[in-house]
Length: 345
Image (cartoon, rainbow, N blue to C red; front, top):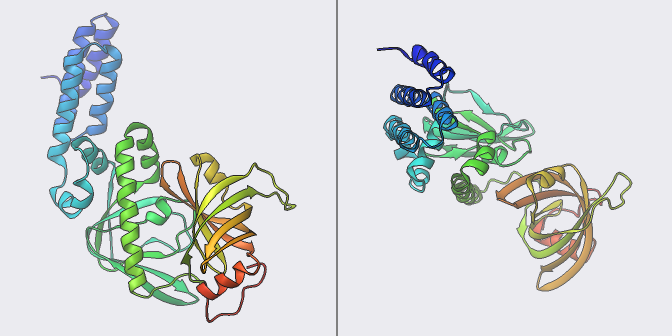
């Protein structure tokens, strides 16, 4: 029986001789062999070539896809699926296989740092075994945020944004993890949008649960406590001289503190990413302390998070905080025991 390399050469020979049907049969045989051997990228590449050779060979095209998916399903780690059942239970077989085989496994010893505070690591980490600790530095002091157990996801902050990590992720014990690259998620938005949407929705739920856990533990990483606030904002990008350089666009306020605020906008990914680092002028209409307030402020975009397709959260640090009376109201809500911020917080 010819080996794989001989069959690959045979395909070229058959095509050169005009025997397209023979090339289809040989390519199908190659797909089966690679799938059964667990060589899934090779199997999928050969199936794509089969389609290019004869896109009307529907029996071989459909059957080869079924064989690849069946082989993938048999090769998926059942323990990993059990640990992350809350996520995989939402997926179709195709989506489950796509996610699992996009993950890169890795092992780390106790004390290994996976993500360092301030660095950018656009990866999502699936913890299969062991424990991780998430902590941040305040001066020279480490403050524990959370101890992560198997079945937990981490890295969402940098995976879904383009800002540096606000905390360090370190192996507390020997760990086994699987990593998903941000580039894969971007590719899925085009090829497998349903998988991308389900994963993003799961991550939002995980982040909400994590925030509740951190809040219950009394951990506060920010210098200023944030409070929820309702209102609208009209924003404009400013140039270096402080003059408007863009058309106004709108956003919905999410929360505010004495030193900054966050709000949600709708934008393309490209235009949203271009806002990072820019100073914006904001005209606010806010409901606070039982009253409506119209005011203005300025802030620099220091972080950007993607929520769902077309929805982003901007985090701004004030360069000119809202003046009284809104500024006074914010001060009392966010920092009741601290003096008012400087005008250039």
